[in-house]
Length: 337
Image (cartoon, rainbow, N blue to C red; front, side, top):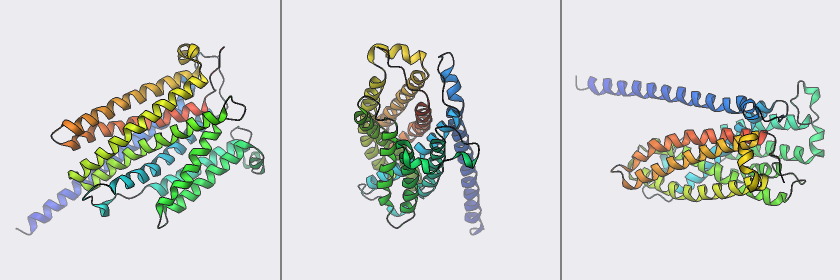
C-alpha cells in the first residue's frame, strides 16, 4: 500500500499537468485567433467613413506583418532574458525552457517571403506564380529590403539551431533595420531621422514583448523561488527604460507624420489616426498592468504574485503587435498645412 499510494498520486499529478497544459494550449490558440482578426478585419473598420482607399489585400499584408513582428519579438526577448538570467545568483540555468527561436525564424521566413512576393508583383497580391517578378526585387529599394528580411530570418533560424544561438542577434538586427528603412522612403522629409526613430521603437518593443513572454516561461520552469523573483525584478527595471524609449520615439514619429495642429482631427477622421489611437490606448493599458506588476513585486508578501498582471500584460502586448502590423499596412496620414 505504501508503494501504491505515491504511484497513484504521481499519476494524478501527471493527469492534472496534462489537463492544465491542454487548457493553456487552447487558450493560446484562442488568443492567437483573436489577434489574427485585428489585421484581417481591422482595415474595414479603420477606413469606414474616412473616404480613404487602402491597397488591395491590405488585410493579408497586415497579417503577414503581424507574423513577422511576432517572429522578431520571440528570439529577441529570449536573448535579452537569457543575458539577464546570468546575473541572477543561484539561478537554475540548466532548467531553461525550450527555445522557440527556430520556430519563430521559420514563421518569420514564411511571412517575409509572402511580403516579398507582394513587392515582386508591384505591391499587389499575386494570383499565380507567373505574376511574381523575382528579378524585379533586385531593381527596387523595397525589393532589396524584402529580400534582406527573407535572408535574415533564414540566417536567424540557422543561428538558433547552432551551438551559438547568441549569434542570431545580427540577423535579427538586420530585420529591424530593414523594417525601419522600409517604413521611411527617400521621398519622405528627413527619412534618416524617421528610420532611426523606427529602429529604436521596433527594437525596444521586440525586447519588451518577447522578453516578458520568456520571463514568464522561465519562471514557470523554475517554479518560482527567490531566483524567479530576482529575474522578474531585473526585467522590470529594463522594461521601464524600454517603455520610456518606446513612448518617446512613438510620440516623435507620430508628430512627424501628423503635425500637432492636425493630430486631434486626424485621430478620428483618418484610418491611420484611428489605428494609432487604438494602439496608444492599448499601450496605456499595458503600462498600467506593468505598474501594477511592479507594485506587487515590491510590496506584496509573495513577489511572484506579480505574475498575474504580467500575464495580462503579455496578452495586451500581443494585441499591440497586431495593431502595429495593421498600422503599417494602412494609408499614411495626410499632412495638412
